[in-house]
Amino acid sequence: MDSKGKSQAVMNTGPDAKGFAKIDMLLEATGGLSLSQVCAVTGLEGSTIQNWVKRGWVEHPIGKRYEEVHIARILIINALKECIKLEHIALLMSYVNGKSQDGSEAIIKESTLYNYLCEALKQSSQTDDHSRSGVESVINNVIKDYSDPNPDSRIRIRKALTLMIFACVCTDVKRRVEAMMGQILTELDNPKPYIPPLPKLAPEKPPEPVRVEEPPVEVLEDIIETRKTVSQALREWDISSVERIIIDHDEDARNNVPVEDDDKKQSNKPWYVRKNQK
Image 1: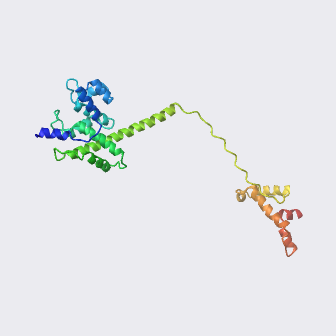
Image 2: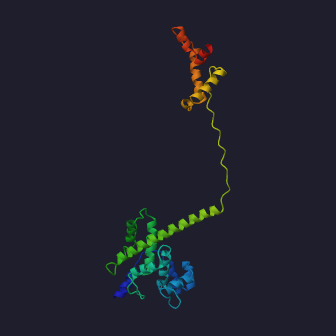
Image 3: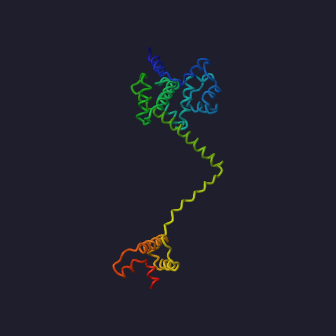
């Protein structure tokens, strides 16, 4: 087998992927696709494909029929164009398969390269390691049956596929972001009717303190007046705190705490009682 036949055999080597399989069936049945058929397969406008041909990024069709090499290149460009500049995609393909139009410098069929890309994306989606080393591990598994016509062919293919996978992932993330942003913009244009919040339930009132005996009204007036004169010291107190003091003194008086003399008995009475007695 000559070198050209060997290269052709190598380029036909690839995974049993379905990335290009259906298109192969169409090509076998038709002998090549028309521009309108290519548009139907790829979802691209005819003017876009013709522009790529004009710029040299896709080879000229043969008798207005697009064959395997044309469609594979179109599919690869279409997969990467949202993340990588078209000029850079052309350079990437030259890095893999050279610049010659006859394919003499090619190290892999572009349809096989597209199949590798589809299979690597499929396997990457089934793993949790999306780092570069994780992606390269997947690629090594995908291209394990590839035979190198040149010493650095496998290295170049692995680098190119790694870049392609990350570009495809970025494109997918970008589309997800755009879809989410579209939902937010829709909500801004059509805001939902305002629904007032439910009224808050009134908090339960704490139980009122048990009062043994209410002090005279004039005594409370004195207490209020005292709070005014010493507001700095009593600002954090509330009326219940003052009432608590009164109650404590009043309980001592009602319980008849024993005392040794009249002065002590007198001191056990609430202060407001002693004040009234005076």
